[in-house]
Image (cartoon, one colour):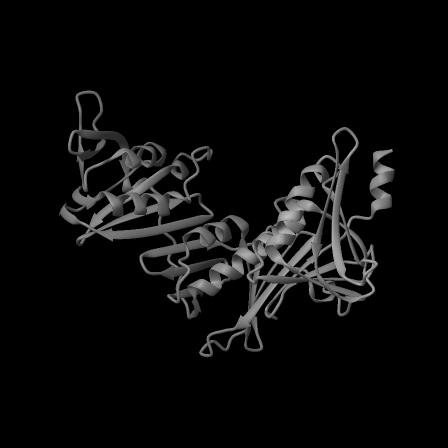
Length: 384
């Protein structure tokens, strides 16, 4: 193999495909990156055996070939390269037969490689594809993945449910304490009902790789519902799917409320962050109180305290519907929700201190975020 690739494109290709490579993985091939030169294209493939990312770029291919090399040294070397192009070639030294050289002017990186036929085959997912706008898919996944469980005790909650039915595509993430749901109309050419669970790691990769543009992404699910492919531009991502039945979350979204506060998202997030510093020392607990001041102006106060540190209270202006009330949340869950709200103002809906709170972006009906409250009495009992 021998090829010349621009440093910028080489760096982008290695970063994209290398996102799937895990330096600490117990399988050696999951720590390697496949580089293949063929037909004036240089292809990069990385995999952790659950997610496979393939990307490619144009290059001057002098001799076709492929090799799998350790990803980390190349990723760390490329930012140091100042030349516009990198020359890639196979070679050998007196001690080692299999070497892949990267040369940029006076800079050279030489890595041992294994033959391409020892690298895991790239999954080929065939089937009818659903077309979604990249910016929509990116935002939808980011808004629900924050709710996905990081634990393995319930595998079906370790991913995002993607379902298509009755003319809508719906994304759902849940971990037993919070729930995120985003829906939208989908490609009218797709008529089949579908429900799959995409693993959290694959969703995080998509969130980083997808462009925030109107470019269309082709989403393909294999006939046996074992894999899903996401294809756009010069990137293909294939993920194994989680097998199992995702719980019915429709009943977890409260149908009504007794109080509704509309607040500036940035002010709400800033207050949550400041108070959360103290809440982290107290079971991550922060208290919220919606009320009217003596002069009739509505406000929401957030407070957190830690016995060995002190306390913090922040008040923000709100528009209040209803009589107000108190509720307590985990500060991290509240901050996670506010960070992915796409509008300037958000609405917090509550019914009681022991009922789920609901966050909605004002002016946008397609997204809802539910957070279970922390019962303050139970926290006090645990502290005793």
